[in-house]
Length: 228
Image (cartoon, rainbow, N blue to C red):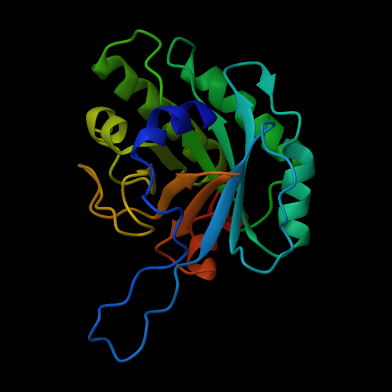
């Protein structure tokens, strides 16, 4: 995701990252702040999972067909130990077999301990030289494989423009969208999604996100052994 952060940095929010939606000037009271979360990989250090301001944490697990993130197991354990909703993501490469990539991801996550309420995610932000149709079909096969093996409808993560270009037929999967030109929660969903679930709005010390859903609602999108 740091690769995407570099591409989006030029459109970062003026004045720094905001931590809640601005209230209308005529509002009697400010709206409740949206749940905050960060996503991390081996490039991140020093995340305070127990600081009290986070509702969820997302850790990179795998990439491609054979690469494991060296910090995943530690982050995965710490997120749970601090009572946060936790998610694991896989960085996809459409040049590879999507089933092999999905199985690699699931092997890493289940080895680290897949618990009820854990979220699963596909991070797709490169075409590897494939056509738009090929990338779209690759994403469908990866997501279908994860759903088949776990019963979880994994999140689809990408930039707003990439999601709109390659998301045909994926509107039934939860959307985690990166858009740094919008204040937290002030983003509309790209087609074909009707609504976003997580908005990644800044990349400073870490990638910062807000959720449209409360923590318990997020967990409801996660792993449930009884639904397999």
